[in-house]
Image (cartoon, rainbow, N blue to C red):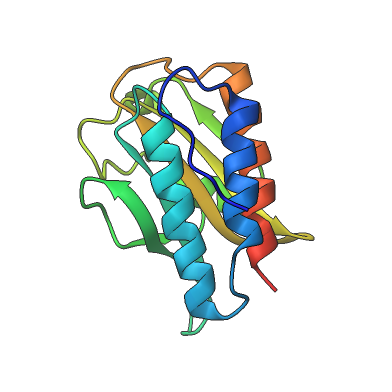
Length: 165
């Protein structure tokens, strides 16, 4: 059962516990998945420091081509659609692997959705070998994310991916 913790010096383990509790409450229908992603982005934005954007892009294969489409997030308005292999998010999707970028200004083809972002971590939301979307976390500080942070985001993405059928 989800019981919010006081904001403060929570460690990653405690935040993951909160995330687990939120995901356990998820309704399996599409609206329940969107609500779970909204809660997950709010939870991460609330407890993490020195970030300016956290949210999700979801794979949309309904048209004649697949793309990542903006999902629930916390932060400034950003681009709505990203192609496979484009920017950090599209590259993480294409390669099915986590991308940790210490300075986005040095990333070839970076899509500057939020001009304030300087470092970024993107983790694919995998269901088996299929990418359902990506978790995207940005910071206004270069080199913001440590190896421990990246591992935390990968664990969070693994928990969040459980909402997909």
